[in-house]
Image (tube, rainbow, N blue to C red; front, side, top):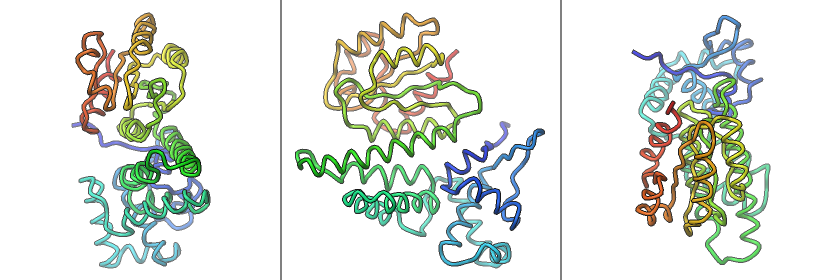
Length: 308
């Protein structure tokens, strides 16, 4: 039976939104968490530890001080919350405290005001109260999709750029924390030339990163030559290109040929509405089209990234 996953302190911080120094303080000063240690003394957190950290964060948010947290966690209420938190982590069902829709509303409002501090607080609350996956899928992602409809003017476009840059920064930070030590990116993610829709690609990239596979997000405006260079240098096994508005056939053929010429020949996969519409053409040129459902699409990428 495989050993349950363990997370470094960087990964635990990314998954819970809790600063690494705070995690160390909770362990040393208050004894609130007892992660495993490697032979060299590095901390390793289990799924149960991650769930416990989220419960602690919620209780502190509600007014329980750190110095009284151990006593609180031994009360019937504390024990019930720990049980519910562990069950939610096992099933992937979000908790009920601090509704994610409220966090989404706060993210939208902060983005409209271009208020970085308020945006950080709203996103931080969504991660620490629920999970990194829930924060992206049910708060930040929906805000990106609904904040600015097409053709709404320069002000709205500036707001969209502001929030997209914020999302990308936090995605890259999370991927860095989740990345296995010393592992070069095995999966690369970028938008096709001219593509500006990034939300679905961000969510897919995060799913792959959460599975413990080193992923790198290059997003929109990444030159295809850069993709080839990174894939060649890192020995990446999968390159995912997103196309929603249209299919740049010449560029796709050029990237396919460039990747085929590399020593390890990474697989080229495509996602998005345009990819679905051109599935037959992509299949004919040897490019795999990802499923429309995020769960199956991530499994396809994981299979490609694991290929020898």
